[in-house]
Amino acid sequence: MSKKIRSAVTVSLVPEAKGGPFVFWDDLPSAIEEAAQLGFDGLEVFAPGPDAFPAPTLGELLKSRGLALAAVGTGAGWVKHRLLLTDPDAGQRRRAIDFVREMIEFGAAAGAIAGAPAPAIIGSMQGRWSGDTSKDGALGWLREALDELGGHAASHGSILLIEPLNRFETNLLNTLADGSALLRSLSTENVKLLADLFHMNIEEIDPASALVAAGDDIGHLHFVDSNRRPAGCGHIDYVPIAAALSKLNYRGFASAEALPWPNSKTAAERTIEVFRRVFGSSG
Image: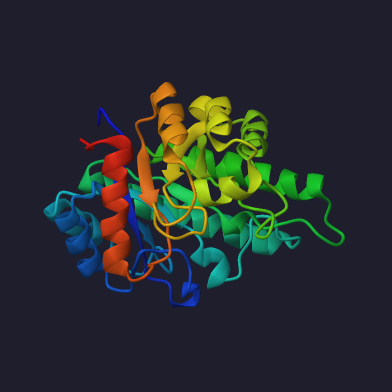
């Protein structure tokens, strides 16, 4: 196991997500090559679905360049397929769960080849409550989904990640405390939180204190700045963030889910530069 926090960078292969906060776009082999040349430890992949390309292909490509699969996103379930785990329609909820199940299998299989089964991330697929659906009702559906999906991830040797988002993207889970409260209500212990510094900058009173309070619930970190540009291009102070993660003995990834500003190459270079300054060399 790594003795330090590991660096990762994102690549999106989802056309419907254009304009979103991903450093690399469209060309998976090129993203892998650039990430390896810059010295990242892993790649976080956002694919259109589990059948976009064979899991062994992704795993072998990463392995050949010494990269881990940090995580796989499920956002295409919403932006491409319009699936939500809290959809009022039971059939749609089932389809959403099945999509995530397949992404869990994809990430676990590809990740195992590259070093270790990778977790799947649930962000936008958590949805929101509105109209005839109450918050408690939506959280109930989300709880049922996470219990099933967390168990499915465990059976494949990985974990499931749920990401609190800012108020403009959801009204279900906005803070790490919201996420921890949900985790306490689950029957599975195989779900962890994804702490995204961009969302935390909006919703948390004190991001570093929120990380410490969440403790072992933290399973992944999105390393980004206040304006969703790469780390170092906004106003986040990373010193207390690093101190909080050190206190938690956090050993997961700090993954750059950031806009490709001013372009992908510069964004990746700036990220790894700031990562090394904040966390030291990974390994």
